[in-house]
Image (cartoon, rainbow, N blue to C red; front, side):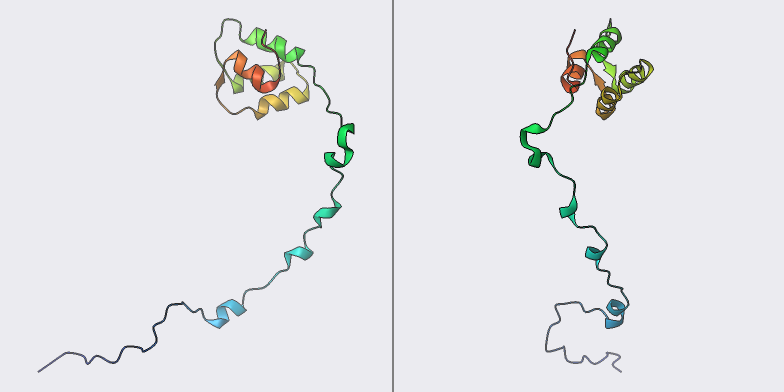
Length: 122
């Protein structure tokens, strides 16, 4: 007795694309996000429109220079966290604190910090 199952004919057209059931796609809501986002053409004026009239406020870096001189006295490298902590304690201006906070984590030599922050190595 032969228990083999008879083989039927293979499909004549090979299927190369997957097909999803139509009900799955029909249940997905369509949202027009263009109606939700404000147009970008109504943004405030940019520096390009002002040309040379834009003034960049210079920050007095003397408090930073004094802090760095004090911090690096006898030290070769200091971490960004320690520099920032001491700057907060010294009540440096917010612009200098934001520059210090923007430094990547790690240790810095005094010349590296002054180059990155725009101060001067004393």
